[in-house]
Length: 218
Length: 84
Image 1 (cartoon, rainbow over the protein chains, first blue to last red):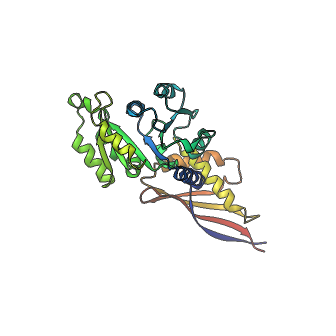
Image 2 (cartoon, rainbow over the protein chains, first blue to last red):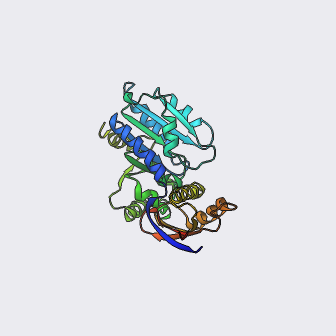
Image 3 (tube, rainbow over the protein chains, first blue to last red):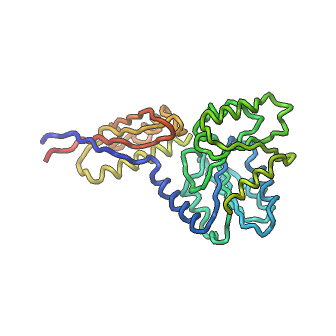
């Protein structure tokens, strides 16, 4: 018996299973009119602090919820629960990113019809979360001025996919060598259309603009 | 380091694509990895080698090709099939 070599042409995304689940989530969110935002940054860039500020600025009646991902501990969920909105912690036990399956599971038992806005705080990591669609309407990348202005060039994937870049900790600008104009130019060199905002979670500067962006479409 | 998860997804996809070809032996799987995909090719190759060790896929070549943007796709599966 002889053998023949067959070439099977494929056109299939490697993460097609994640993409399928994310598409289901996106359809669910659309059906319930939920605006879902996926927050991604390095550890310590201020994702949780920005969410604290955000939740603190909402009236109690606003239908907002948060899923927060970490490798270990529910410390972030405990920080965010104080504001009185539904919060769930996803502990990934080692995984460096959230995937659509984890989000689907974390949403079990939640009444999506009672929500207008859902924040997903991803695991602190600028690389891995980039590959995983969670059904969000937009990825938001945070970059603190305590990091480097070359980060968009070093981690182009997330700056390519994010709709908005939030430069955080701008109250530190007088004390750090961060070159703001370069950071913005670097991000735009990866993605000319990226929206850019500057905030300080400490002084509150820029938060009004952020809240306006967050509320868009709800 | 999510390349292990990506490697698993590739292997699962290959297994699914093999189902309509009973008796076939996988020779090569071609995957395009975009520069903006967030996936490191060396790390992916290393993880893939680790998970196929001792399986029927151990001899299959993982052919990682550079691609544009954030592409991460399986493009071709090469099989050796018994001639009927």
